[in-house]
Image (tube, rainbow, N blue to C red; front, side, top):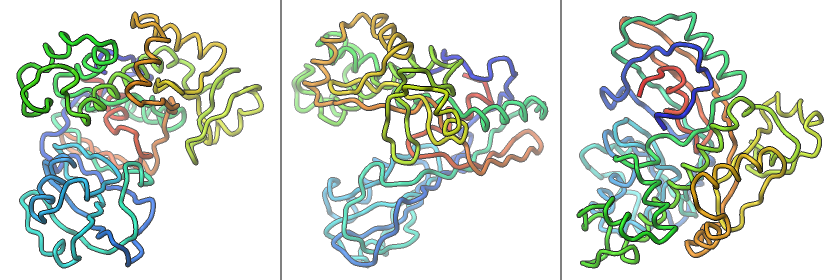
Length: 360
């Protein structure tokens, strides 16, 4: 992600540092719905500090003596943050959850509901983020950057979190898809307890969850490359585009771009890019040429890639090339700036902040 172009390339960034303290990065889920008060699942809102969602679920699973698969979440939150999110837990009482005392986790409220939480069961996320260690802030340049991002939208790049600690998860995903055992094993190294099932060391013994993570990272890498090539027109529609509807995630083919200009301006629709898979609907025209160019540069034949995605049971979808920033506020004091804003689900706050900071 560090080498991708900025939308606001010509405006200097403010610099600074993120994640100095977990409290500097606060995120709160905006639920898609509220628990009804009855049902077989116990919903709770947790506040976790310096833990990933996976780590929090693991600790709660052990404390309640329930399997991790009985615990649902609507989103995955990063480690070096303070974050609030809902979980659903099956097979426990409300009292069991209320009396939990786990380091790094607070239970804020508990209530029953009739279904398990699934990834995507949220409206969006509310953030309050402090950027520290600023030498000076040119408020005029900062205002220019924020004006562009609020009017045109933010490039919907997948954030660095998608690519693992070493930043090479997409390369492992590519190697998995093309069947390059040696590259996969070399990049994973000897961390057998994390990635592999049992003593075997080949791609067939990689745990299912990690297999999906690596392949999805490769999808994300390809999307980022397509978006970068589209960046100058990422907020304009072309004939043949697959326009993304922000209210429900559906797409439709653009036959007359001028007729869609009003909806585009109101941020009801946007151009979309590919999360490649074996059944993804394809655009036409100039956008199709961009996606073909990106695949060609990868050196993987599209029919081979499609076959590999089918074997991995990944169908493919379209993703908006931009996202809106709502309820944006900021305050500058001493050597820091605090930003407060709301983003739709699936969008990275770091993609917004990289345009402002322009640091690596």
